Length: 125
Ligand code: FES
Image (cartoon, rainbow, N blue to C red; front, side, top):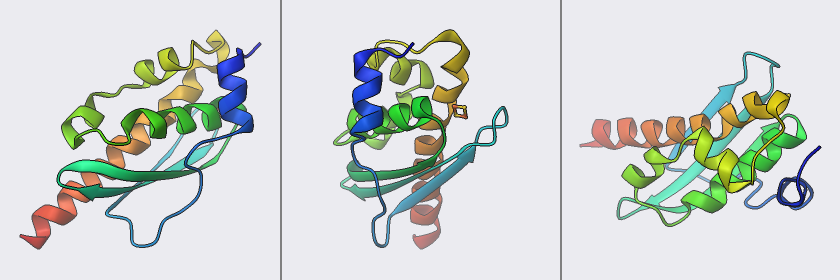
């Protein structure tokens, strides 16, 4: 039911783990199934220099988390905010219809991490 790209990102997830002292952290839960994803970002010169994730969820959630980290590394914060759940699902070549809700976590957690970074940066000014 999953295509090869989804399976690859599930079995070999990119950028999984945690970083020390991240510049921004975003955590979201999926109200449909209760799964949780956390994204941490390191920001340099307004770009995402590094990104890590931990996902307590299904295979589709792990694959979309992995894909979103690959998509946004090196992007400016504004560019990364433009990456949507749909972008992530498309980059994976699509998900089975009943698993589309699983792609909701990926971009949402990233956007929360960027907002967290921005609010901390604004408070430090
Ligand atoms: Fe929960 Fe997929 S079943 S994110």
